[in-house]
Amino acid sequence: WRRRTVLNEFLRNTEVSRVDKPREFFQFTENFHGNAPLEVLNVQRTPVSSSLALPVLNSAASENSQLNYVQIGRYFNGELSMKTPIAEGPDRRLVSLDELPSSCTASCAASCTHQDTDYIFVESPDKLYIVAALNVHTTGNKPLECGPLRGDQGIQEVEAFLWSLSRVNEEARKARRVPGETPTPTVQAGAVIFDACANKEKVVRDVTNLLTGRVQQTIRKM
Image (cartoon, rainbow, N blue to C red; front, top):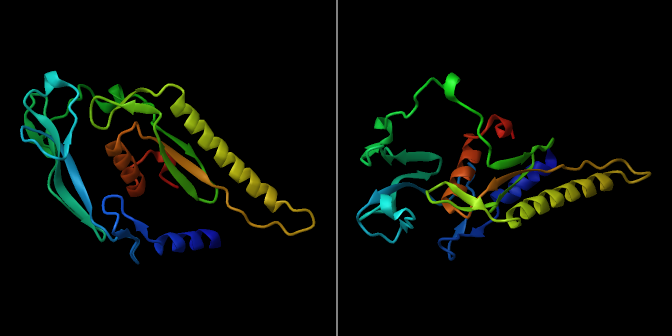
């Protein structure tokens, strides 16, 4: 518990250079919120060119249009202000999400099936987790979707990460078992490994879901 407290204090008081603005620094506030606002972006298909345009890979479905980031909200100091996101309906018409009809044809109990997860969860008895995003698959043809495997490289990176984690935990256990000395409390780390699919939008979504609790029941208690 004491080590976790020290680690939390270190993270809260550490400044890091921002990726988007290298001359500015990110730091957590006293309430553990970020000192920089987060923009909430919605991917929309528009005919207007933009510097925020996403590559459209399906030209037949996107003739005379392109995908763009449109800011619909802002999260800052623990407060979220957001407009209703826009989605593309079955008839290609843009509608707000609260007006989008369901495509379900049967009740959930009759039609829902188990879906393969795109993460690996290694539980930690001390509730200390290392979160990693590795590119096991390539980018898909649609936003937030994955493409085919990156051959063996992506899987090998995951195996290397898991092996390193097990070695760190094993060395910690060995250090605790020093003959003739009182066992020293050690921390056993766990991990959450996301498949980034070389897609920064997917990484942002996965990490946001993790931090806000919108995740599978398996890792909700971490």
